[in-house]
Amino acid sequence: MCGVDGGCCPSGHVLQEELCGNYAGELSGVAARVWEFTPSNLSDYIEGTVQVFNASNSNLDVVISRASGGDVDFVVAPHTTASRSVLRPTALIINANEGQSGKYCIKLYKRVY
Image (cartoon, rainbow, N blue to C red; front, side, top):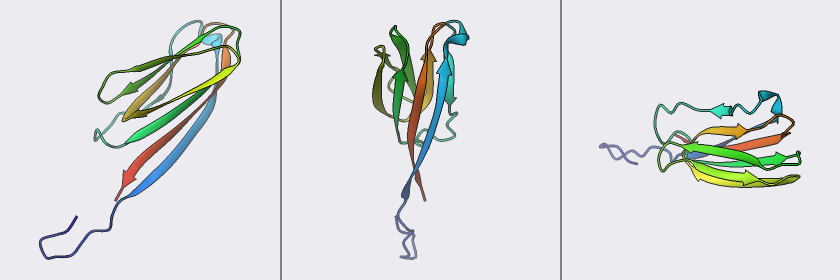
């Protein structure tokens, strides 16, 4: 991107953030919003990859909210890991029932200038 005087601005860089944690079913079936971002600009986080491990013996429902394009829902089978990549993520919701537990990681990518 160049200015009117012919000088150019440096190109943007992509910053990666990684957030990891545990979830547990003492939430008694209440959806847990384990990460949420209120965008000041719809392109703040340009992409995100969510990875969820389900240590329990039953399926786990996961929802990734996005700034546009609707939610991405997926199921993590017992004793497995599932991941999804989405554009412009805004929230991660884990619907853990009582007795369910596991781990999650979110890699977020943001363009900075």
